[in-house]
Image 1 (cartoon, one colour):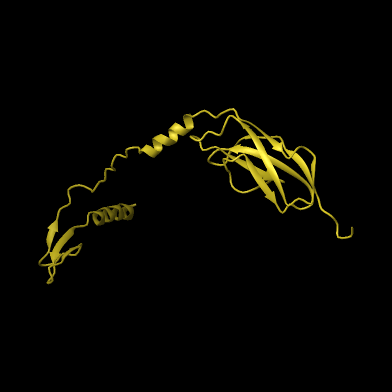
Image 2: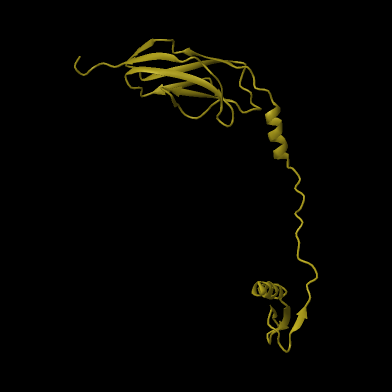
Length: 171
């Protein structure tokens, strides 16, 4: 117990270390905890503190809150071409057209995303039609969705099934 008390007193005296300031022969100021003949003791009154500056919200933050306030339009989206179960014989291309009411909200940056067999066809766009090329033979499912600027789906059309037929080499 006596040694524990002595240890606590010793640690307390170490924590109160002195700081000395000296100037070397080149004129450089050196701070150290070792006393020297030319050293001058530096008394530190208070611990340094830091007050962070006040951050003023920018216009961008205000615009983001305005975007959240804009109501999502009640879109009605459907695929007008190709028709359900339509068949194509050796097509070079297949034109896809969507019908959308009301028009896309430009302020919200809403776009249309076309998907073929569950995979996006290109990037979201504002045009209501696309052209599909190099389609493999077989049945395909087409879907169009209205997405916001983050890619979140707002509204999707009903899927349309269409078929591509190719001539066989054997024929």
